[in-house]
Length: 431
Ligand code: S3P
Image 1 (cartoon, rainbow, N blue to C red):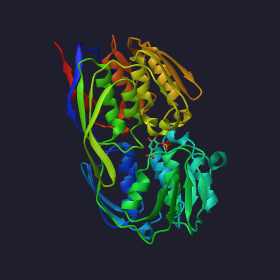
Image 2: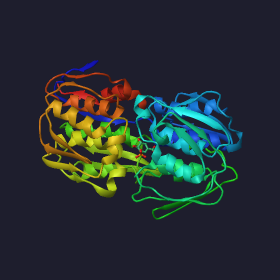
Image 3: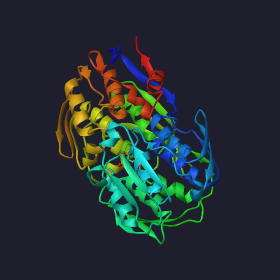
């Protein structure tokens, strides 16, 4: 239980760097481990989720040393990975699960994989269906659609697969299987999802081509270890930028943050809501776009968020919902049914939390409708063991009229262990 005390008159001011991108950190560990030679990773996100991926490769014989946010991986090559002696534990990490299932499908040994309660209830058939088509054997409960799963990999054949879900995790799992399959594997997306896997595979020398909404990969003789700089995570930056967006007098800059176009739907929505945002120092590092994002406070107005932008801001919807409670007019979020199968059902969680705090918000099957602007009263809420819900509540508490009590905020360490300290560093008191 944690009580967030009512604050006096505050505003957000200052510059900060947020920790490394979660998606890119996972991928750097995976590709570094299956490449030949050394991969050095700078600004790695040393959070619980990413350490699950590190531990999985250590169990397969890969030496990975960590010194704070610096990581050195002695890549073994795909053929050098060892059959793990113990089941692989993926904790809360959907990214570890979907990407590793794809990778393990191509490796010539058996593995058992499992996760925590939340992950055990998240659908895995979305990645198992395509890898079954490629020739992998997977066994698990409910027709092999949930963890724990037993996998027997090897001897895959390339397929052409149109993704039925808008998911970068599934796309990436298939590409990692395709890297080991006979013949070409093609993945076609209905809507573009984050493309970090494609970019990084290219940097490691894989035989991959992207054209329009299609990606094609052939088995590569070997990937070559390379250095990776991980940009700040825009999904973590979103919380700091949002605090500045709803607290008058704020002016915050998040430096060296990833601004890959497949990830910045959140910035586009903020701009559409009327926020003052500017991006400077734009450059490309390790194949990823990076820049400094500055925001100054401005009254927001409601917007419609739907269609192709949804996969580009899927993780930011909880915090967008909070922004919408402070915007003038209505905000409608549609086509976001994927939120139902995240770390928790994020449509139900966001609506319950914000309504308890005093917002005018209702759930729909595939999104939510928020009527602004309403003042948040505070109260006692659950973070549903979900890091992004917990951080959204902490930001909401900054503008609440009374104290906010959260059942448990330990989930924050899944993606942003030093979140509370970073937030305090830009929080200023008027008195
Ligand atoms: C991720 C993809 C998204 C996102 C998750 C990280 C990734 O999930 O929500 O936090 O690293 O590929 P889906 O692919 O399930 O949409």
